[in-house]
Image (cartoon, rainbow, N blue to C red; front, side, top):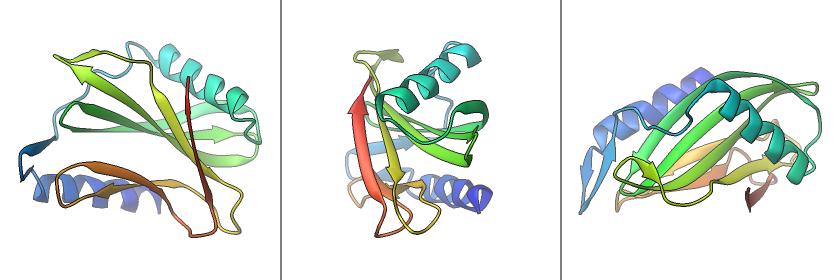
Length: 140
């Protein structure tokens, strides 16, 4: 299911390579300097947002960029199973100009996960996989 989601996001990004005045980039985004930095972000988000389950490892990270916004879709394992979150940064000349925000989806009756929504104007929105999931966004 997660791999299908990632494939759909990448195909959508490729299909919408130029919409209006915004461009969605398929090139790699310099989001993390190391895997330890990615681990630290996930651990910090789990602690700050009081998420269930302790961090065990990152399964994989997928990246999207639209205009000045860069997104890291982080799929990780916790002691409660597989989870996901999205980190977002504003970039200028491939350098971060702010601290990341993190979005998670939780508390639903389904297996809540975050999803990308490619808007008609080329921007990327973040939503939840189920209507009864609660979307929580916080700065780190």
